[in-house]
Structure formats: C-alpha cells, structure tokens
Length: 254
Image (cartoon, rainbow, N blue to C red; front, side, top):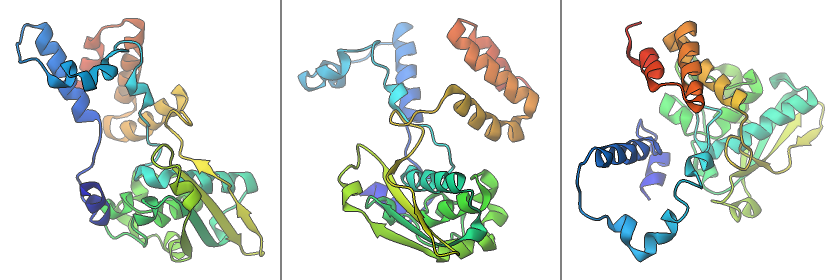
C-alpha cells in the first residue's frame, strides 16, 4: 500500500485529517454564502445515509487521537509502556541492558535501527523507545540534529529486540497495543503488560495534557506571551468569545 511505502521510505509526506477538515469547513461556509454545487453522492447515496443520521450529535473530531510524541502513532504504545516501566520502578538508562518490544505487525515495520534523518526518526520504533528511556521525554531536539547521534540512545537501539505478537495483531486496527520488557543489569526482567497508546478515546488526554503539549511546541516558536495569548483565545471560543481574538494572535505582526 502507499501508506506502507511511506513507512519503508520515510519522507516529509504524512497522512492526516487537517486538510479534510479544512475542505469540509470551506465547503460549508461557501454553501452558506450561496455557492452552488451538484448534489453530492457522498450525502445522498443510500450507502452514505448512516454517516449523516447523527449529524450535530456525535462529534467525530473527539474520536481522533492527539500525539504526545513527534513520532509515528504505531510506536506510541511501546513508548508509553517504556515510560511507565521506568516511572514505576525508578529506572534510568544505566539500569537497562536490553529492551524487548512486542507489538502488532505494522509497528514492527517501522525503522529498526538508529535513524540518520528526522524523517526516519519519526518513523522508527526502537529509537523513540530508547529516547524515552534515556531522556524521559521525546522533544523536537531528540528527533533532529544532535539527537540523531546520541550515543546512549544508540546503545539501547542496538540492544532492542522486536518480537511479533499475534494476540496484539488480532486487536489492530481497533487498538494499537504493545508490551515492553526491560532486562536490567542486576538480572531482573520487568514487564509492562499490554499497554495501549495514550491520546485517543481509549486513553484520552486531559485538557491540561493537551494544553501542555501545545505550549511545549508553540512557546519556542511564538514566544511565551504570544503562545499563551493564543491558547487563551482558542479556549475562549467555547465560552462564546470572538474568533477575532484568535486571529489577532495568529496574524498580527510579532
């Protein structure tokens, strides 16, 4: 498939919902303003009827996932499993001598080694798990520049085993699961059990989680004051505040 070609050859092209949402909103606004078009088979066909019966009641946008990490979603369950193991047992990278990852088939197709480009870093599996174990987080600095030659991360990537898990494959695509085991220098092996990736309806983020992610990525680019102003303006939309406040922080000169 085209999607798996992207996985095998990581590039700057990615799938996502943003452009579809923009096209849909643009069409709605244009129709409201009187722009005409032919009847849409995607609306009027009998096969499509079920998709429109709950219009305005069931918001599909709430069923999307929000990525906590700047990497492929397929890797997130393993990253979360490693994070939770380190937190639960008070582990650091110095404690770990081997990493074992079990997950669904597509996840195991992600880049298996140390990436040499940011595109490969975003479509890798052992790499983001190792970054989480070493640094306790995955930021932009870890998937670009000097982060691609981090010696401690490279050590763990080289000591990672990827293991196919039929029981987790059977639950894909409805779920994205992984299990991680860490072999420790003292001989112990600690396991996560089955872990689902965070950020979707299965394990949703709180509003503070979402706002925290936004501020982490926006503040270095927009500056703290502008990022905070935009945050407050967007949250204010739910209270009926005007979009002009959002536009001011988006478009006015810095």
